[in-house]
Length: 367
Ligand SMILES: Nc1ncnc2c1ncn2[C@@H]1O[C@H](COP(=O)(O)OP(=O)(O)O)[C@@H](O)[C@H]1O
Ligand SMILES: CC(C)(COP(=O)(O)O)[C@@H](O)C(=O)NCCC(=O)O
Image (cartoon, rainbow, N blue to C red; front, side, top):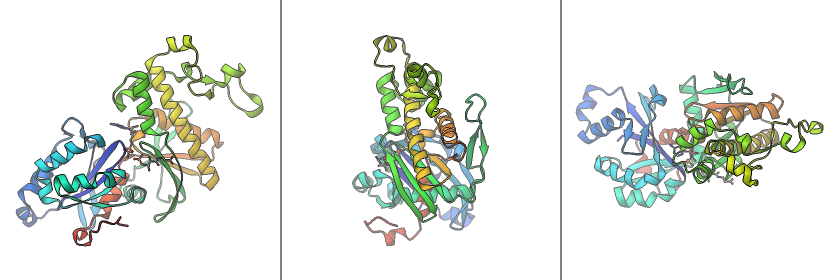
């Protein structure tokens, strides 16, 4: 039975597949044809249909899980395409072979019946935040370059990624920027609490950007944002004060009011799609940064780790978050980022898999 972990999120479904590389000739002989075909299909392709992608740059080789050595493959597709995924699973014979899939994320609950009815698969459900933390801890110990920070974040043109030693992680604040945002204070592998959250997350950025610019994809939204300038959309402190607000040390270039210029018809007529995309990105990112900073200072924790697919191909947000953490905390807070940004829930879920799952399976949430 192939080893999968699945995180069915509000926007994207993340699938992690463990491909054993230590298969003995004897095992290979016994391997059913369907299993061999599934293995080949998953590991040879990097695109699955029109919307599925394997992130080949994230592949982890020579990983040991429960005494087996192999590679971890990272695959994603839009959750809205779930019915196509189920048809594909059926057509590849997966449904004949896989009886139980370890799943996390809201969709593990929402789509449980679809899995059962359409492909006769049971979902062994795990909590998404438990899985997220387990996935992070596992990945960090198996990939020494997992954790990094942005050096010189204040100057976007020269800032660059630098490795960060995250082998002594606790305590840390974890900010998961998916469709929405969850903020956790993590004190140990099984000791964490969800301390805050906001509905203004990655889904908000993409939704607003599509409305404001007519773009259709996240990649397009990020490309537009890269070419735009939020200062044509936002009202800055200097637009209000003529310079800095010195008494409270607010620099003139600080955003005083996001989208604050857009009440003027003239301004609306001159603003570009790129500026609107950039302003949307900056608005959402600054709000997340501000919540993260308040959480860190309330909890007296100095490391803030940002994960989630909102950060995918999105250095603008990472640098902004890094700068904001540093600037507003006067250098006491450090923003950290992880290479496998959106896949930790699925990894954590895969780690819960064990061969005896079927016999232990119950409809209850497994812990
Ligand atoms: N290819 C993509 N399609 C849609 N959204 C994407 C894509 N890549 C990155 N994103 C961003 O990632 C967010 C989803 O992040 P993710 O961590 O997968 O959350 P969820 O578990 O809620 O699906 C989206 O709201 C969007 O901002
Ligand atoms: C409900 C969620 C945990 C779902 O996770 P997601 O699919 O967004 O990664 C998340 O969207 C969230 O925490 N939203 C913010 C809710 C709030 O605290 O306002």
